[in-house]
Length: 418
Image (cartoon, rainbow, N blue to C red; front, top):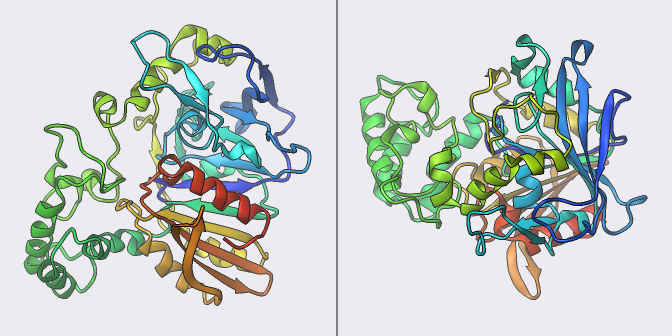
């Protein structure tokens, strides 16, 4: 299972097991006065003898916490902290980037937080992510299956996939058709790649020189395009390296397109100041004390820790979506339409393999009378799946279009059409 870019959101029936330790956080450095929402942090022990300690942040719904759903937010990477989603994406706080002067950063409230309509648990997983740690060196070794087992709780109602990667043979092969559809490559280049690669740009034949040549021409066109938001600027002198897109088989696999190109710590400040500022804030001793993290368990907090010993041992999760049909789940799949790393054309293709019936034809959905994206709904018996695009949004769609994504979530949770 490729977690790169996967923001999985699950509705869960209960919070934690008896091995959890919790603390109620009433104030945070950088926010004036008491927090106007309930924030709880803590560790959950999992694995043999609770050797793995997963750190979580629980934010109570600002609406009606007793009746609103409980959402479990698992960010991608693997190795990206739930704190990133809490203060950068869908949580109730947003860092004040404009007024940051090098001292401890300050926050303001996010008017489009998803906690307006739901309780949310943000988790640092797998082990080694954020403030999560292991009591033994062996405990840090993880994989798709082990991590899923560590955080597993039976799904009762439904799930959401946000700009996720489901199957590499579908999602990765959708990137070149997407680039063509977005006028990033010419008809000639696209047709040449399509014919000479037989539509297989991922796991292609390394001896097919006509295919490699066609992909090299495309790579040059996309070298200065930011994958996660094709309209965003890239850092000065930080054009994508030739191997970032993996379309030249002569480069090592570790740098292939299977890996989403996210910023290093050195690049964070120029690509998005909030990344750098979040790291500055989370590593402050007063912040870690306020969050009740355990001293001595972490050398340095990182937005995304790509150094964890992690094995991606599940290539495709498509079979799980097929099995969920029998359980009658309520599903939302959404994509920012300017994300080339996990393009919306991938989900549209794998959804068709589920053999569902179209219940609501492709149409625009509106916010304040303006087109916010496009949607289509599918059904099979008690199972339903709503697919949504978010206009102008990149990989973390809700950070680009917070109002629109909150509207989308509210409609989906209340079972109302967009």
